[in-house]
Structure formats: structure tokens, C-alpha cells
Length: 242
Image 1 (cartoon, rainbow, N blue to C red):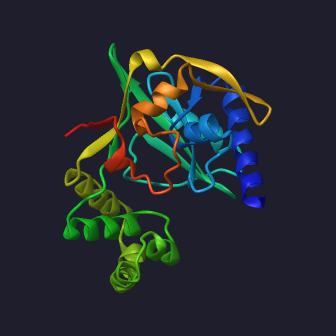
Image 2 (cartoon, rainbow, N blue to C red):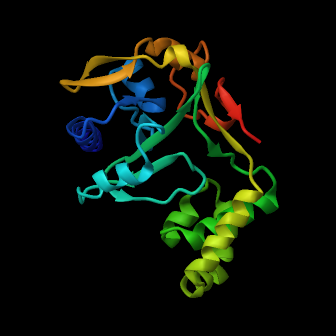
Image 3 (cartoon, rainbow, N blue to C red):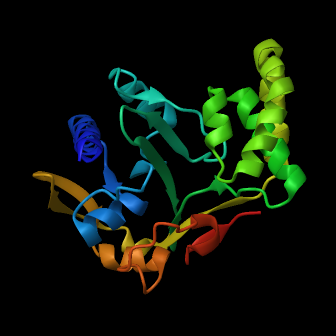
């Protein structure tokens, strides 16, 4: 209950910030699912998702706005290249930048690698480049065997994280992205009109036909809770971009 209250406070603050700065936004992804289906933020969802158009605002503009509030600390999540992330006292806040054309709206992230070696490289680079604690790095995967392997890998990685110059970290990060493919969500542009609904005694912006948007991502069974949903494998509207 306490965690739910904290998440609701964070949600309200983000809505306040976006509204006071006249940011044209809408609630999206798992956050939209929880609000429309359950009238609450999903307890098992680790983030709160909002979307904006990338031709209306830049990352730099949004970052400057949120940096004014000490409750929001930018978190670098390199695989989600079209999003900004902010850690808070509760759930992480994601601001997703959607691109649109005459037919569709879409967003690009980096697909999680499938091969063992690439997964290892992915883990190593993310730890070296990002502000990630040892415990966070180890606990980012389920399974004791995987966590043990990560613990062993961290021994040399800790040294590299501390000693490697920033420009080399940038090059390492760039080399990782060249090895990965991009994937994201895609929606018909006709579904991207928005309306206001009440949630937590606030007027919030959601797609005009949220049920159709949710079905577009989660399928006809979107009304049935699925705590183990894996977006990059199960989403119905995956948009592969090479």
C-alpha cells in the first residue's frame, strides 16, 4: 500500500510538470494498461510511461524541465534510445519520444541480444558505461547461475569502470549499438488522437480509443493480467528497424 501511494504521488507530479510546461503528452504502454483495465498503476510494472512527439520536443528540452526537480534523477538506459528515464523514490519514470508519419506512429529501442556471447558483451558494456551499482548489476537477471556468472564478470569490470576514460566509454557504447538491432512499437496514426480522462482526481491525456491501442500491443487478451509479459517477444505491434 505504501509503495502504491508513492507511485501515485510520482505519477501526479509528472502530470503536474508536463501540464504546467504545456507539454503535449499521453499516457502509454503498461501505465495505460493499468489505468484503463484496473484503474490503478500496475503493481508489478517497474516504470511509469508517458509519450510525447519527437518533432515537438527534444530530449534536451524535457531533461532541462525535469532537472529542476530533485526527485527526478536521470537514469541512463542505453538500449532505449528514443526514451528518457528518471529514477525516483518509487517507480522509474519513462518519457518516450514517438515519431510519426502519414500512416503510423512508432518508437525505436534496442532489441535485447539473444546469443550468450552478445548478452555477455551487452552486460559488460552497460555496467562500465552506466551509473549502476554492483548489486543492481547482479540482480538485473533471475536465476542463481546467471547471477553467479555476472558476479565473476564484475571483478575485472569494476576496474575498467573506474579507470576507463570517458571517450573510450563512448566508443565502447557505440560499438555495442552497431552489433544490435532496433525494435519498438508501432501504431496506426489514426489511433493517436487523445482525450482527457479522470485518474487520481486528475485530468490526464490518453489515446481517444485506449482499448484499441491496448489490443494493438497486447492482443485480444489484454483484459487478462499477465505479470510475465515480455514486450520484445510478445507485443503484437513490434516494429523492426534493421
